[in-house]
Image (cartoon, rainbow, N blue to C red; front, side, top):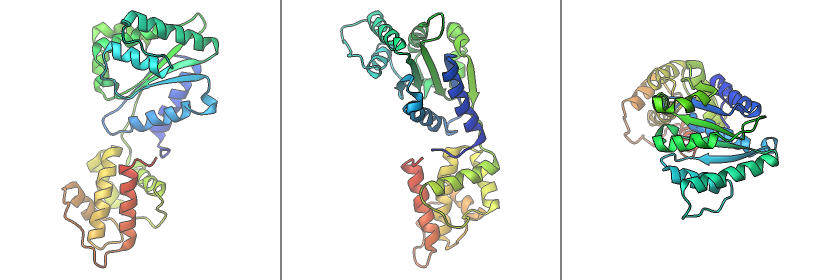
Length: 279
């Protein structure tokens, strides 16, 4: 689960709309740490529910694949047995037959690719060939690409003009606002079981936001270090000085004697939420 941040909610709603309307192709772009992988996981969880039973999902977490490896991965996700002797044409033919068989069962194939800015050009072209499959009524394969801004640079190459034309929707994930940063920290703490009083002063949140620039990944790292700095300073509240210590990389071990237990518990819980990705 992810905090109901407005931009992330809009992104998720758009993805569901694209799937339900059968529009075929969507890209989700954002800077590193803005929550693309979290959105990808949220989509995959939705696609595994009963209400999404009309979809067969193909998930490619590591796109650094050759065309042969891509076809093999897609085939395996669709339940095909890989034939090591088959060439690209034969593998694509097998995938096509499987997709047509699923279409007869009223199931569409959704290919979800994370970190898609790393797709080699030849593999991106191989992906385009899969998207050619459609009937007069609807597209049989829908693709959602999650990637950093380099994905746009890749797709803007002239050789990918046909593929670019097929991308019907795009969403650009925005950094969090100051208010959303505060909500995000509170959410992370609540998700790992903390339900005590507010731990970050408003000025601490402002400083953290300015340095992290609204990027959830950086917010996680700085917030955790700031909690530990507050604990080491025997403070029951995270202040700007603690955030500044976290920003400066001051990782001296905290003083353990007579330090407030509440902030230590919160720090450890927050660390668990960050490093074990409790979502």
